[in-house]
Image (cartoon, rainbow, N blue to C red; front, side, top):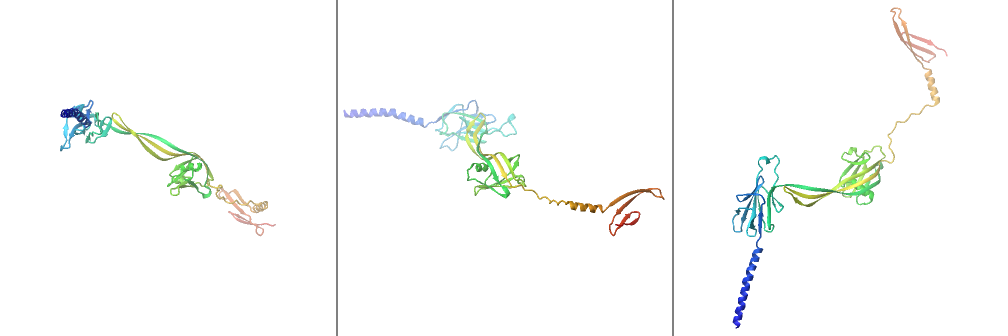
Amino acid sequence: MRKIKTISILVVLCLIASIICPLAMNKAQADDTNEVTLDFGDATIENGKVIYPEIGEIELYKSTDTDAGSEKIDITNNMKIDLNEYQYSFKITELAPTGNSVSAVAPLPVRLVINKKYYSIKDTSLLELDSSKFKGTLNISLIRSGTMVNTVVEDVYTDATANGVIELSNGKEYVIDFDANDEFTSGLKAFAELGKTVYYKNENGKLVKTENESEAVIKIIGNQDENKAIISAVNVGSKTEEKYQGTYTKYTGSKLQYDGTSYGDASVVINETRTDYYDRCTYNLIIKYASAEIVPDQPAEQPSETPEEEQQEEKKESNTEIKQETNNTANPKTGDNIAVYIATFVVSTAGIIVTINKKKWSFKSSKH
């Protein structure tokens, strides 16, 4: 009786095992299968390959660990393949444009698209269908697609003000300390560049950066090691001071952020945001070049004569007479009129007056 019970139990266990084991095996087989559907849409399929005119062709190959090479598989639309059973690959061959499609501009590159993800293709390329990357239905197409970059630019300003006096009188220098954070210094930092020498000119009452040193009014030398900048005056001549008012903006750098890639029917768009950073100073400055206006040297004025000196000068002039006489007479021989110029010199020496005439000399005595 005990043997019969033991046999019955064994029979029941065998029946249970015969039911459970196939289920477990089927589940293991299901876990080891990755069956995908190849959907090529409305593409043309000829001789076992997918053809996209003037773009390219797609062929399917499979290989195993034991095979020395790969075997070409004829493609049919919506065919199913198990990516865990064999190693499958797409072979892409680009077709050159012909006829009206030929252009002096190089054609766009060929891209394989699987479920809206783009894959770059060279002239002849193999794309492995990795079982870990592809599952379910694969929507496949081959296109020519360009890559565009869509950049959104954002400007970020660090604002400061500089209202006050910069004292450069008689060769003085003004120091901008980059370690200081007061309002005036923070504003002036925008004008300086550490490690460089920059020049600014006066343009309609505004400080404008210039590369031409000869037209500059101030020079700023940036000292990277000391974290300071030195302002000095140049080419100001006799000016004592000038007033400047305006806004100065200096570019300080950029940051690029990738925002993702979007795909169109014939394009790949890379989206990014570029942030540009600026220092911006609103200023109202008086720059002093000299403590007093420098006036060029003028020739010294001669002292005026006194009334007594003027009277003595008049007496001298009255004692000297220069007379010019013109006498038109007829030459008794020719009858012509001739002009006789007489230069008379009055000489007050020993009471004798000497008259010099072109025609004759005559001496007259004069008694005082």
